[in-house]
Length: 159
Image 1 (tube, rainbow, N blue to C red):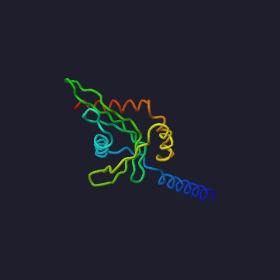
Image 2 (cartoon, rainbow, N blue to C red):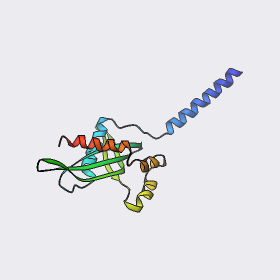
Image 3 (cartoon, rainbow, N blue to C red):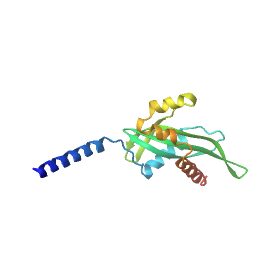
Image 4 (cartoon, one colour):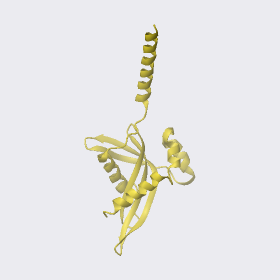
């Protein structure tokens, strides 16, 4: 009788674990091909350059859900003048990328950004899933943010 009760409890725990595990949102890190596709999109489709330079981006994925990727994008324009590489325009912002899966990896179809100023907080609350909102609000100034800046600089060295 005791073994049956223990086995029953174990089965219930396994079922509950399976249900909660299968309901969680995907938080995987995109593979190299998908990371490259995201960077290409961020480098060319999200912001305008001010000095006719080239944008080198980096990003941190917070979460993937359905056909959306929620991430922080760091985009910096670099341009040449008198043999020196200089900083141009830049933008560091949370984004939602709408994607489509293909045999060649993801295809980024569009993006959504929160508005600036007093609308920023309400847009974060309206656009982003609750489980990542605080991480978004806390992200600027973190060590991870500085890593994104370093990645952008390293990518620009090939420029």
